[in-house]
Length: 111
Image 1: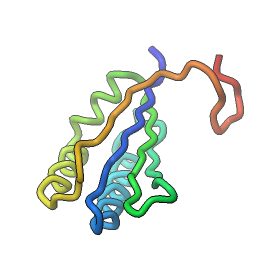
Image 2: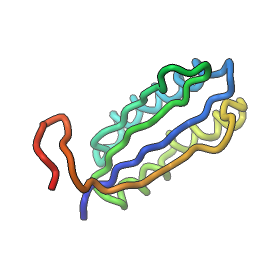
Image 3: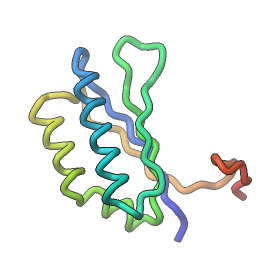
Image 4: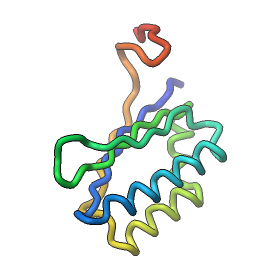
């Protein structure tokens, strides 16, 4: 099976952006240390807006690996904390995708 990409957009409540970024940065460290099936896990921030959305760019070895990520204790803890601290302005947008064309950091074309 092919690698699975996820684009996840998190919508922080205005004034709580830094707390959300702090939690997601910790999550990235946990994912790096504990998930060998996660190939890419990058937190990015939208530019040019008052309350920037956090856009996650993730790649997993397989669909099963992507599903496994959502069952980890660190994933559940992140979303539990964001909910209990009322950090999300609305539910996240999640898109699971498969690469069809283009290139990545290695500059090799995907075909």
